[in-house]
Image 1: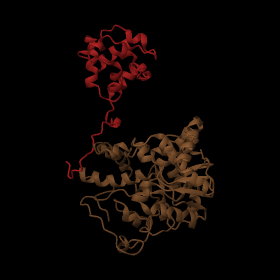
Image 2: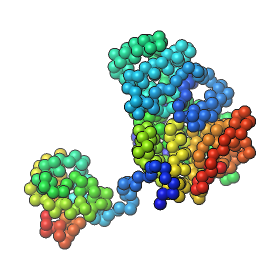
Image 3: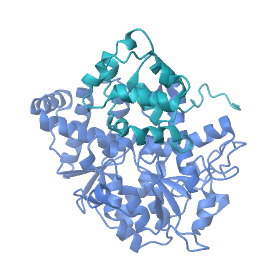
Image 4: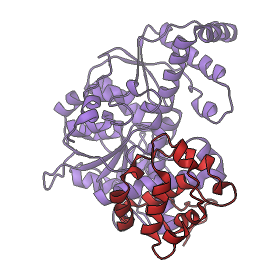
Length: 356
Length: 117
């Protein structure tokens, strides 16, 4: 991608991302719908890149879903954040990395609120002490998990087993990205590339040999929006936003979509099935959707992980055409085998869009 | 053509497809009244409009609609203009709105707009 003007300034904006010693917290949505993503993320950072990343079994949700659905007030949510930070402090870490974009936005929001209103921070500390006798230190660094992979993208590229290229023609794969709204739209300086010129995912794609496509609705929301989805009457609005994005990217014939937000990955993937069954239209050619990968899955494919170990069988849209294009070997017979080798339930096959 | 009923469905998009709405009339208007491009859509003209209190006359909405190629409905509302010039006095961008209205009517409905306005 070529940059000019303000886009060039933002493309050169690098947030500070420490190189090692991380405290990791999971995402509610990602670990339920794409459970292998986070497991392989830790494998990649520890095993392939040799970094220290620690996960504590007692960490919890950040409270983001309840907060954005107005089920809990901000003070409660900030107390949960304080508890997460206290676990990090007790574990001896000061660099905080979270898997979820919503959480990342909330942590930024809490830290900024405490900075502007120290009395609220004091209140949170008091409530946390009253409820569970815990104390915390403010993290020296707060980043999203995709920031860390962005920071290490060239190391991953150097160890690549498969590039993001067409194995037959050598042409770079055409990749469209979708950056979660809460990653940088709330606090632009906290994201790589800010809100308008996101570079966190396109930087990875380009480092791994792919071509990043800047499509018109790139910055549009995936439609999840918490209350748009969780209230069933509003789901038409939710799916309409995803429809708008898919319509916008379709003319560029992307090989896959890469996202850094757990909810976005889920909805861009699953709504393709719903849209296919409501309009008979599929976006990756007849009967085919556009595969949606999380950034962990894309990194895992590049590093040569088995697609089924990455959990790609959990996707609605079939990933096999992409694997064939990249030249990634896979055994179709093992697609629905669990990590213990036993068969897991197979999904019902939809009639309009292929899922295998 | 809904095949599966999920209990919700796609809402029709009201997005304006600019590529399909290229309108020679608006280009002509811009050439004649380049001030139309200065409008920031603040709505001051509409707020003080005498005709607007009794009709659908809305200059702010009209300018926005013209730029989107949706001129049929909005231009008709301008026939209610009494040319009092209050909008001209309050426009923060100094647009000669009265002259602009006359030009819009001349270009978009030459048979009727010019004489009405």
